[in-house]
Length: 133
Image (cartoon, rainbow, N blue to C red):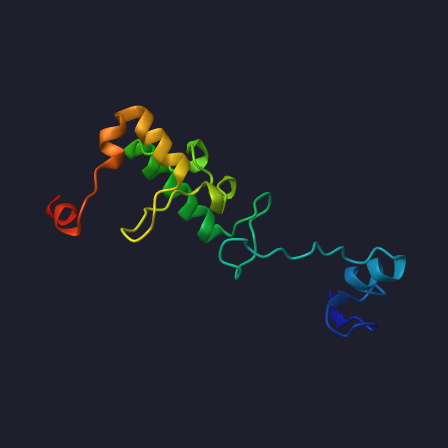
């Protein structure tokens, strides 16, 4: 059984009774190799992904290892349960500490007077008294 190169592609070897190699036969029939698009790992952005996953084998192995460590330690790294979401807070909602030079707004003074009485709202504090605390 003598082998010869395919006369069409001159890459593959065929037997003497064949006219073309299997690759050329598929191309001639219109059944060219269907190549799946290559997807890159979403974690590292370097390696090709494993079938059915968005991660390459290295990143997938690391992710599984991290999951096992989290299960073993009992820690849940799920931040979705937090009460405060940074997107929900507006700048107006943030209470900033007042400096000594700023005056207390009238509405807050009225609240203080109603809660603690007139004697606290009228009392003046000097800088030395505040520094001792």
